[in-house]
Length: 251
Picture 1 (cartoon, rainbow, N blue to C red):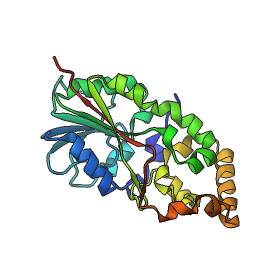
Picture 2: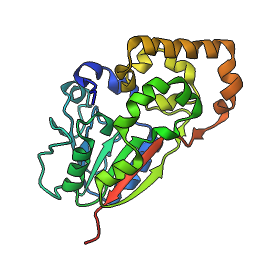
Picture 3: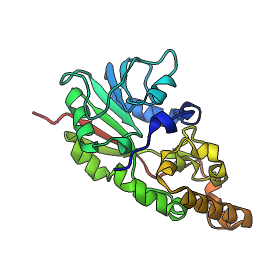
């Protein structure tokens, strides 16, 4: 599986990938009453709760360096080999990260191993992207989709008692993943916005240029608004955002 080098690509991530408070509230609720939490693939610290003890794990030095000075301590560790005992924490979480792991199934099994309570995975079900993004970004989505896996695959790899929740993507989402611009397509024409979206690191630069030249033409001609303009009036969209939540299996 092709990997994104976050020691190179991750610079400036903390500026564009700011936790959206509405998404954060859903993650907090899924963690329940857990008092000790492990955040795996923690990056710069988005979505880490501040009201409980937390330990982070992140393999990229560039990403670790962007963590706030008052953030939780962070181990230089990969998801597939967590340096914790079985049932070491009340809960574990992983936010928009599983598609970067070298072995997703092994990493998810590790989260389930170290957590005695819920494991909360914030991810995407790319089959449910909004139509215009599936169309315009089809080459990129085709590369990214197997990296995320299906929700059913993620649930099976986590094990335990699993439920899946859909999170609406707010119209003014502050987290700069590419789906967050579902009703603000013109912002994606800015390369500095796309720089914090790893999907474009996997696409040939000429393909990326073609994708956004096509989008620019559709916006300038008015075609995008003719076909999708009603989206600009919506407050949120039920798209690809998912929480996959695993509770320990009943003995």
